[in-house]
Length: 117
Image 1: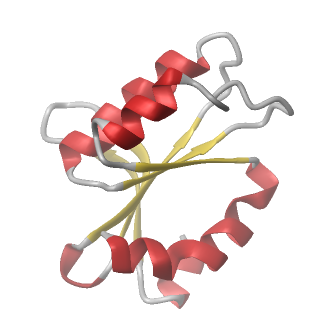
Image 2: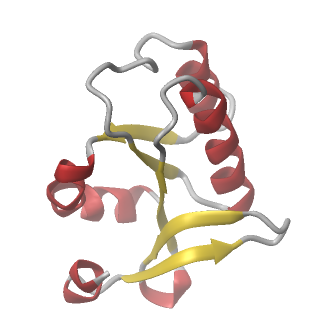
């Protein structure tokens, strides 16, 4: 959250959405512009279902970017219909990032997320 404020963004933990769900971490730009939703997932078995659910939550709330923070080595979403659906049907970009890479990933991409939002 400190990273976001240093870069001129605002981060909100456990953002309650209009439909009563929560987004783990929501990052906003100036004037409340929705920049990126971040969800932390620990389920290997249910990752496709959880990713789809998280994408729908973020999409309903108006985010165009979703970062899934996922600690496992494998990438079960690679070449997945879930990723194709999220990108093609919802028009969102999704990134799968390891926990230790999150800050670095945000630092490299947050301006791009902001300009695309």
